[in-house]
Length: 390
Ligand code: A3P
Ligand code: MG
Ligand code: MG
Image (tube, rainbow, N blue to C red; front, side):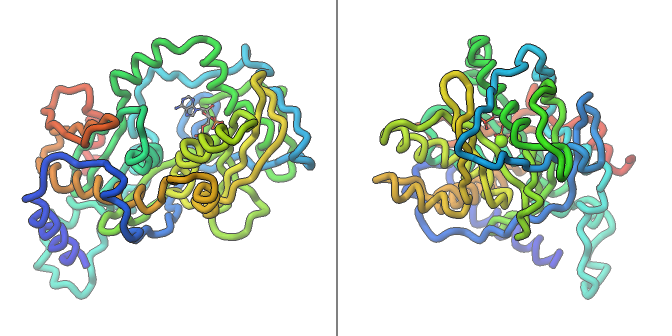
């Protein structure tokens, strides 16, 4: 199998050497059969506690605890805002949570050679120098990539480093995003925190406990799941922040994604909700194998009035029924597949010191540039390259 993988990689590279150095993002190019996507399987987890200390446990996984009547809620998302403890956003954490997990579980990344294979065919060096997964990144990046064919606002910047057979990918803020952040008003900032307050109203810290919205929200606390999956020829390992679990849900993955959204009052608002929000929500949950999303619909004063459940697998049909020209899941996944292939084809420099930066803005194709050692995009810490020493 190991040898087969090698041959496959070489063939993939050969076939693609003739292809262009840009990648188009038009939906019609990707409207073909759905590529094989393996159900994501959890291989690990971690928590960040209230002080942002990394923990090798599930201590920060919250439990879904909805109110009995989901139609008559009154959750004030502005409550206690002044006491909120915010995670330090000025620190660029890149892939840190994932790298930390890898450090503690490094044997899980090593390739196990096929026993029947003639040992002399694999040199010891190769065995220990090629890792199992083609790609390592955060789920958030996969969500963004899945939505690219339909995105017409936000541009994208992804840095890629090739290390021991794995493409490490990290999203960076674009110049536009940085400017937007600088312009954020206090009111907008407060509204960005509403989603976290909502999480507090509908989750508890353990099974059987009740939510406590009197406590200040602390965004340092987080639970992260590490999963592996495969999309066509690409094996993936990615990390994702998970909102909570539903202990009553017994089929497979019982994680739940929580969202808030403005109460929908017109057909036009409903169509926008389907075209833009449901696409992002679907992509974010589907890629992690999360079966359901619970949305708290709020008014302009930040008061959630009712909860609505969305079955992730049913979202595409819901959207199809609502829109004339709906987004299509197959376009999202075919594009992601091609993007990953584009990375494999063009990231050829194996030096740890080399970073490839992929850029995209709506209306243009994806392009890339190679950067040498001293660049702000060098997101893998020095200790990580000393793999054999830890
Ligand atoms: P909402 O989902 O209710 O908008 P997530 O839903 O991905 O678990 O994120 C939790 C909350 O973080 C969001 O709640 C929102 O308040 C905030 N958030 C997430 N992504 C954001 C972004 N790009 N900009 C601003 N706030 C964001
Ligand atoms: Mg979340
Ligand atoms: Mg959420």
